[in-house]
Length: 233
Image 1 (tube, rainbow, N blue to C red):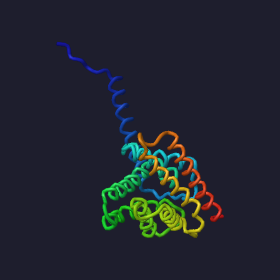
Image 2 (image 1 turned 90 degrees about the horizontal axis):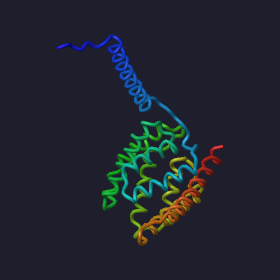
Image 3 (image 1 turned 60 degrees about the vertical axis):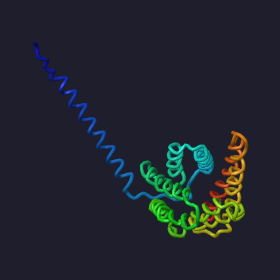
Image 4 (image 1 turned 45 degrees about the vertical axis):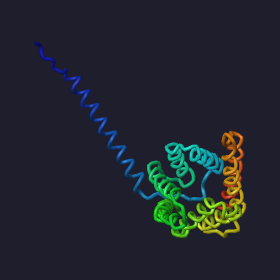
């Protein structure tokens, strides 16, 4: 039987292909390490209100239509848009935020909800590492949880209470007077109110409903963007 002997040129091509494969893997690993661990800071005040509003609308829709994988990808994209998270770090942040949200979802009392605080603090500590602005991580995490509770317990709190809770969270994050965020809080609470209402319609929310929700969120994010830009100058 004749034995097949690879030609030298075939061996060289195989080695070259293997070398390129290992080189690509090394480049990918370096990118991931740099992305995750090299310090990088941007201003939390720089974002596109229209893009953030559209993405938040899509995230709400994915959440209520029970599409967790899509929601996770959208959340990571939102973190890159709103907080300038690097690509791989956005998934780390997305995991931290998702874990806090789903732990909260399982809760039934304020004591249960408090168990999300460590995850929220880790999340906001990661946000602070990306930010040129400083803020009190514990305070912002506590206020974030508070508006989650206010929105969850709608039989106990009003949408005015929700708007006020949103105002306090933004004021703490941006270190600005709470009165500056009144319009933002009202519009964002209005968007949540509308979303809560239309989800319970026969057949659920329509495309027109989601468009209305997006318009409310756009007004909210435009108001926030205007405030953080003007007061920072």
